[in-house]
Image: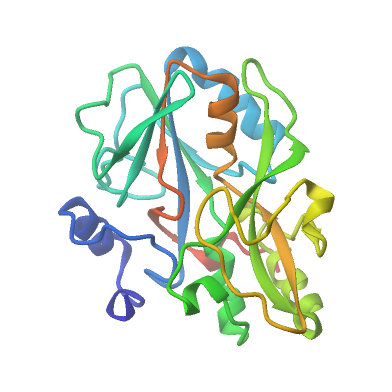
Length: 263
């Protein structure tokens, strides 16, 4: 992973396309924005676009393709959304059909693809300030949880928000809030700090997605809105077909993190 930290996006996408990278992308391609993927048929695309606008904290939209287009022309020139993510999930009628290293056989001419901002972006800013990111240190995927926080519905799309969690030392908490609040296009400031039961999480050591990480003495769990939210929504509303990234396996864009920061 270390030799991929400073690599450039188009090289990373090529390595992923050739199945040289199959793991989660946290810590890869430092300084560049990573994104969550949602692919839907055209007849559901407007409803989902409206859902992203009503739920910008969980679903900050970076780019949407034309119908049937595979390239994200503005944020990743030369990309192919059917091959450029390490692992995809395909849902049919709300049920997970499976995980795949490419979706070429599933892609249809009526598909519309969305890339949503990802909290991996602000992790770089946190690490630059010497703040440890526990799941990166432990070589794990970030822990993610389905909460009791309901998203604002749009058309058929409705359901609970998913959050990601990072343990933060109490004395660094204000710094972390200040840094992440500068990145509203990648979830921004935390939505909850402390007691996980307040947002419906029964067991912090048993995440719904990703891996459990250690929370040390003097640290508090801090929760951010998460781009895996559409997957929880998919299980709730059961669209005919919906394709997403596998949790933690993100799309690497050509956008620099600093381009999304508000100073």
